[in-house]
Length: 408
Image 1 (cartoon, rainbow, N blue to C red):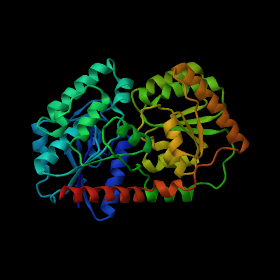
Image 2 (tube, helix red, strand yellow):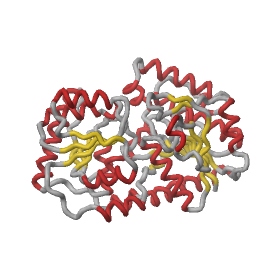
Image 3 (cartoon, rainbow, N blue to C red):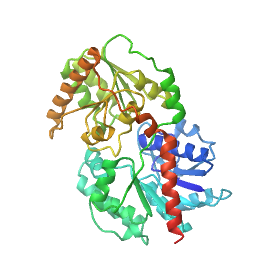
Image 4 (cartoon, helix red, strand yellow):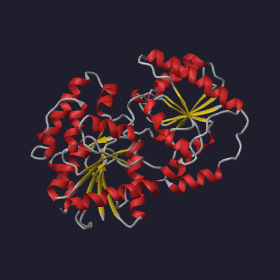
């Protein structure tokens, strides 16, 4: 089959949804299918990487972040024409897989409607939490976002749905899909509870089989001597709670080593906070690393630290760590419950100062367990359950069911 994926950001940019899209594409192609990924074009030096890849259909965009990592495409007729023109000479599509929540989703549903194709929608975003964490006046923004949805999808099922909050927005998108999937059970149950879909398929985002095997084979059998080694990775933005982690690290007084992997708007603030607290000897900025190197760093660490709360629809990093045999300090109780073993769960608190104190306490406990050789052990079944080959097989089953229903 020919699957057309629509994304809000180019698959070669930083982010969990982008990693998932790249892996899904690769393993679908290994299974003999054709994949086209439609997403905003990148800019500057970033535009050169992957530019000649025939599986990518880049559409006109404008950069939206100072580092030009992320772009925006207006979901209008110009983009529609560019997408349709981009399919000249490509095999006829069979199915649209929307891997987006904003402009990419609108463009995907519009494309599906023009060409009479069924849609599978993987929802990656807790829109309500994400908007509250990143913008002022979130109620106004959500009202505007729902208005934009109705305008962009006018004449389609998603344009007819009313409502002004984050769940109304997701319900509107799902109205045009034949199947909805979520990358975790806890997010799937929330989607069902809020009427986004009566039944949501749970298909975890996975880890590359080949990389997993390479990293596990190269990992040392015994822990190297030295201070406890923690790793934090992700986008350095408010919803990921990097700054509260650094505050907790300083408060904890733990003598350890911390690698910070990634980049983003808060990197400068993080450096200033580290200097203010005098913890430069404990924290290193690794920058953006390749996928392989990131996983090697996780495998070499004594523990991964996950700090966002309520924002993640899956939270890839603790799953990746568990697959590599590395335990994790986990702030989000939903993620801690889904990962299962190998977790130091941070005590839930409603206020940010309380959360920082609870995280500091957990970091001290984790460091003591690591030093004492009593760190919790991840579920040994996780590497098999989290392999991308198994996740792709699960998604293909959803595709096949969707195509069967489309012919009824």
